Length: 85
Image (cartoon, rainbow, N blue to C red; front, side, top):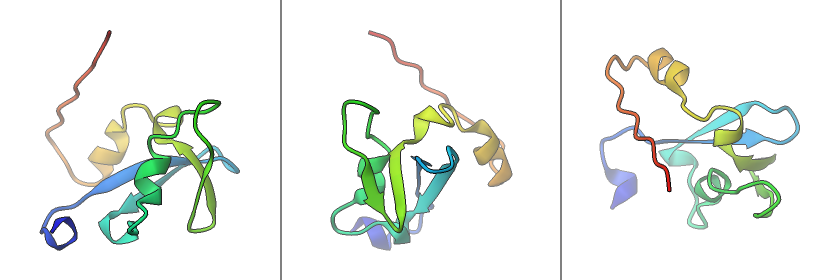
């Protein structure tokens, strides 16, 4: 089961009230996976997701490639996958 794995999992979403990225860890996920849904909610296409008192949308709006977050978390190796259609 995903929640029992010994890995760190983060998903980011933008707090619509402050414009800042809010990070959610594995233990913040609920069976309805609102945090993950929020991290994929594109403005003007998807509804705002309400989770843990926040109104959230896609975290890529405020931090599209979160290298600074990764570095501050202690990572020294980064893989960035860019996609285009």
